[in-house]
Figure (cartoon, rainbow, N blue to C red):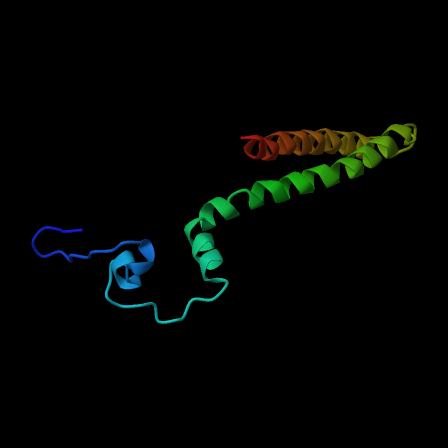
Length: 118
């Protein structure tokens, strides 16, 4: 194929005849020889952000799912607790914290589950 002024003219019959230096746009070959992992590493470097982005929401999803049994267990202990004791104020405070933790767990589940659906 013929190109304009200042460009390299190469006549090839197949892609295997094209030198690597012309394909990558430089006259230098890579400093390290290519190995079996070169393509994989190059692809991971290119898509690193897309590869790592779902990890954080997935970890939070796992955390919130595994905290549900603890919430249920504490709720059951709260319901069967003796309310006639002198620690009624303590039970009331624990009840508020159960509500807050339930809201936090279920809102966290909803928020961390949404990016994995998209």
